[in-house]
Image 1 (cartoon, helix red, strand yellow):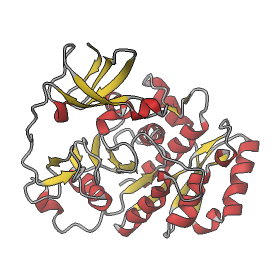
Image 2 (cartoon, rainbow, N blue to C red):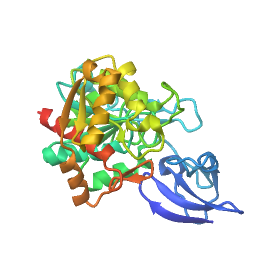
Image 3 (cartoon, one colour):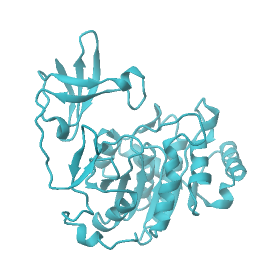
Image 4 (cartoon, helix red, strand yellow):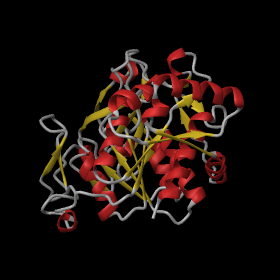
Length: 348
């Protein structure tokens, strides 16, 4: 027996009766076909067994209604050579209506691109942009560094509904965006030239991975995203992961994820944005940027993130990160909104 909790065209959330227990599970209709209360399903319970935060759900692998055929004529395959591989119509592919306009593109023409290291930062960044420049069109490029299905993101759904996000593109093996792209470089080009956005935010979906090592975390991609932006002639902007209530010392102030991404992974100079913070917090953050050499390697600027947070509140949004809502731990979102404010000022 299945109880449907939430249903969208691209995602269904249900309670599945496993006999001895019941769990929440997510399914993707494009892969599974229709699922109803009498459906029989096979569920992957790895995330439940590991008690993961973002991934602590079951995922439906198969249902007895599973009779799905390709919905697109696209020849680009994502999740290649797995049982769940699917073809998509990538925007840059020859069969796409956008192919000709993208065919010879090697530049994004100065578009500001904010790279983040946590999916939750997306909320602050887009709000920071819209608070400073309401008419700006914003695109989100989701990488395949964490969750692969964009429909899993309740945050993206809520930001779209609140009219704070205008277009989405999924790169690499990530899928489900309004646009699909083969890689990050082409994804940036797709959002600039096909979606015609003024500002791009890029980063992984839900589910950052960490190992308590300097290099073993998916947030390292932030540096690579900044470099990709610079390579294509964009304005690279880093949103800092800042927090003061995480019990893990490595994430106190500026997270070691951000410091490593900006000192080891990023090889080109980028803009690093500091939010306005209380004096004691700002002293620690400035000291970290100095000790790590970030303030020499990159251009450090300061901006006010408060207008972005006010806009989120105005739209009845209280995003959270690692279980901590913005209203209780605002620093992360202040930093993100400050980066968005700088991006808005650089937008054409």
